[in-house]
Length: 236
Image 1 (cartoon, helix red, strand yellow):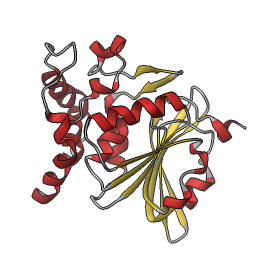
Image 2 (image 1 turned 180 degrees about the vertical axis):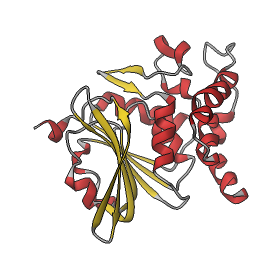
Image 3 (image 1 turned 120 degrees about the horizontal axis):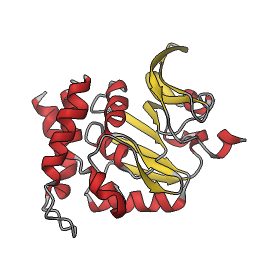
């Protein structure tokens, strides 16, 4: 465990420098600690690697300025283009449910603000993240670069087809909701790979985990959620 905790701090050294935002009088670190204590740990997230990642990554850096005061509140927030940055607990719960190991290669569908990718990057060796909205893809990559990450790889495009030339993936996380799990994503899972995905209609979705074992799929229902719909081919 000691070796693993050392690893998760390394990609984030640049982000640990003093905050130079115009709001630097705020106690962002204190707010983040309170967020983790009250919203994450009290709701049952005990994986210390996930908890540590949530304590490290500055969620306010991924939130537009007009909503930044609410960065550590227990709620999703708008990031433009009808998209949101997910509620902190949901980010932690989805990350926890992936059962990650340090050498895992992870595919993320729906980069959004880049916050979920940053959390994952504290835990695994490589993240491949796809975003269909060009403006969000560019903004997320800029934020991630400014924070010093080097293990997150971006692509702007339709996530329905995944990232086949980088497959297989040990884990796939989807942060938008199709009405059914895209087959290309299942095909790109490695054996014993896991996919976490919200599935359902606009206002009624289940977060599910599908594990691929020897060609068979084991599906588990985790909780009811509401995510923005998956666009692109998923809507056709």
